[in-house]
Image 1 (cartoon, one colour):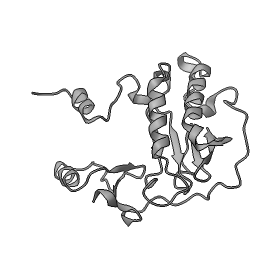
Image 2: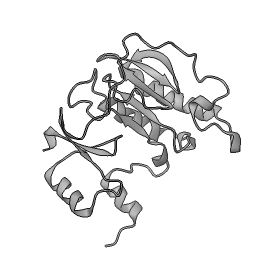
Image 3: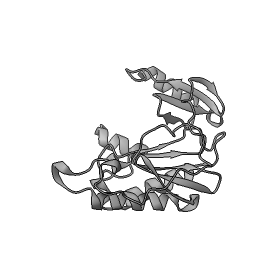
Image 4: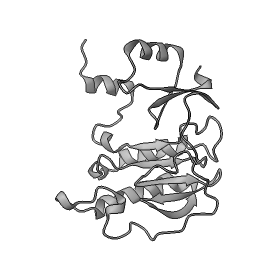
Length: 207
């Protein structure tokens, strides 16, 4: 049986919805839940993804609209985003709203708040060639700006390649991984994490 590319991807479970696939742009601290950080954001990321996919209006988000979730280690603090958060501890986080800051919220409520803000952006962005592509392009602020929380971390360096706490970070060449490299990788490990630095993190628990 020969599958189309779309069908083959859907069988992997990586494409839970065709209508919302282009807006599931969620970047998360790669080591979250493995080692370090202020909080394990894997549950928050999954809930946010579920909420984005459940909102019938969100396919109208621009394809480059980016959500960034920093688990408090500061590794994604310098990354530009449209919406996101930085964990302040195991139970609280401050929201990121475009280039500024939003409210400090319980981490358990953060995914819902971010999804609501994404919906509000769609309502406000307008239509046609003048429609806003990013939160920072809106005519009026999405929310009342707040100052940065004093508990925010300093911006951290990107994850180096090689052995790192929690696993091993492998660089992906610009040309991509060859078939043999992919076969070797998938045969040797279970879960892997694609990182924002053109790499793949192999958690120790998967080795």
